[in-house]
Amino acid sequence: MSGHSKAKKRSNQATAVNATPTDAAREPRVLLVDGQTPTRRTLEACANQGSPIMVHHVATLAEARAFLARRAAVDLVMVAEVLPDGPGLTLLEAIAQDKRVIQSMVLSSAPTAELAIRAMRQGACDLLASPLDMEDTNRRLREALSRQNRSTEPIRKARRLRKLCKKLNRARLDVSHQVDILCNDLVTAYQELAEQMQQAVTGNEFHALIKHELDLEQALRITLEFLVTKAGPTNAAIFLPATMDEYSLGGYVNYDCPSDAADLLLDHLADVVAPRMTDLDEVRHITTNTQMHRWLGDDAYYLADSELITFGCQHDGETLGVVALFRDQDQPFDRAVLDACGSIGPILGEALARIIRIHHRHQPELTFGDEGHGYSNPDALEGPDAPDSDELPF
Image (cartoon, rainbow, N blue to C red; front, side, top):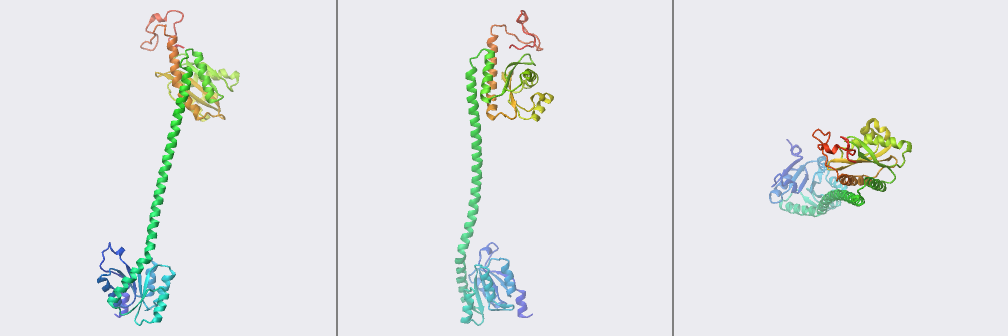
């Protein structure tokens, strides 16, 4: 086998000297482009004498271009002046055009000043005579790699700076996201606190108006006036329990109902809407015909195209009144009206309970029997004022 064939067989081989797999990434990498085996051996010997380098060896220009085209990390290129497929200086020209920061040396068996000048113009930092002298080659390798380190330091700093900037930007985005969440939470908390404060203010305002009222009709009038003040022009009605499962109209405000249809509509609300609120301690807000039909079924016809707010007035678990507000869907109720209704319900329930106690405080105490029909005190049923078996004391 000829020397040239042996060189071809050993081409594209990488020789790691004084290196472990974990250190290889940090060692300077030298690309040797030369078909002469003694040159490669000299470089390996230099490494063994204290210059830890990774040597990649190829024999032709084509192999060198293919190696560089893979964007492999290379710190130093040592190229022979003459190669089997062309002059070595053309490789330096390609490196310069690619704008890669790589130190380069030219190897020549007959170095001349003219060759040195042409090599320098192509970007070479040194010209070495072959066969290589080990001590001289070792010194020039250190100098070339030192220049490479100085040349690439700004690039490494810029790369580290870009990485830091990316990390800072990610941290900034994370902080910004957390701040957005915190701000949204604060806004939500503030809104909830403002609503609670407004409810408290509304409740205190209504309580101040009704706390000393002992007349039922006057209490209902105060309640209706207060609701109209908070909601604006609206139809409003208060229903009181007549028996255990029936309600009657206690008072109302007619805003836009035709007078001939108002009585029919209010009777319908007393018969259908009020009983549905008996066991509910929440404000029911209905805004669409679909919701109305889902809740009332065929009886929703009476409130078509209307928006409805209704709530019960409870005391000690008993519903003592039901309030209903309704008007055209083109005039929707806002959140403040719902909050006001939620504040009024329990206060009105307490006021109604107080009126009942005051009204009946001189009458004998009446209690239902075990089956819920009749009273345990038979004497209480005598006389013209004795209540019916299911009638509530209003």
